[in-house]
Length: 403
Image (cartoon, rainbow, N blue to C red):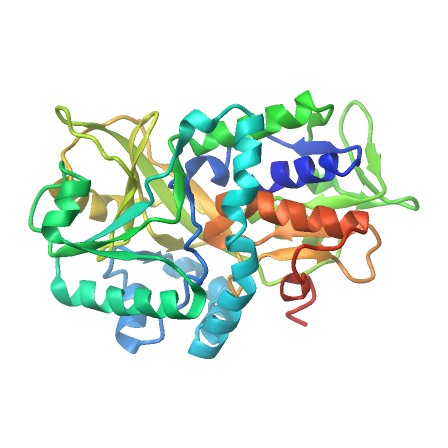
């Protein structure tokens, strides 16, 4: 989503653009998410500060997180920096910096959806956070009130009966919920990404299958190698999500990227049961959303090496909880899907030019919001690259902010 959106934005500003990927468009993380355009997602997903939450996550006692202990020696530096950016002051700073991007996310997506003819996949129902426990609901209500007061995030408290009026097929005891009306959702995020790529090509863009890890600097700019011959350009945008750091390290650019992995599985719904909007279990950290392939159940974060073997234990933990909340039938997929979110310690993306590397630009590190922020970050980097006035100050997203 991020790379295709940047290509579309540059193309719209008169640049001749070649989009390069080793696989078809939107086949990786952009395909497997919960399908949310998170207009409410201003505050970051911060590292927990309480010792109890840290220990329960580290010991894999909670379904929200899973830690690969073998990866700990590699993860420690990244998690330490992530923890440092979890103070209230730094969270507030990140939220302030994220707001100009997040609040324009829908406005940048909608024209592309119309041009790409995928409006039928769009839902304007918001999403619903559900709680079984009154005390957990009260904590979340207080946090949402803070977000409303500080950053203008809209939320609506719902009683248990009101939750069932919104989603009549939810089952089991429900203390209450919170409706987030601002976000949109789509029933097939991968199809949206592919439609954007088709739009790019319909407008004269070129999509080439090649390995971006062959990127190298030349006297005149940048080059990617392929069997048919090299592809050369004055400027290159590295928008490779969780693979961005691999390519950048090979050309001498080291940045504190790490990944949060996540899983999904599709299920049939029993009987006539339907979900009208994505539903988040606020106490267990999973999302259920109606997709074209079935009810998609997505997990929380797994902290592991990007390319480590799949360990979908979180899915096993949350599936019984999801079945207790909604009448899920058989699994549709043969194996769980696994993807990786590209993260930086402050949970802000990098959007800008690499200092002292002429023509080398980065549009990556969008953590949980890659699908949400693809078009708006594409607009920003295109404005910067073409000398236009940026719609917002790009300083918070600069590439060299970590020193």
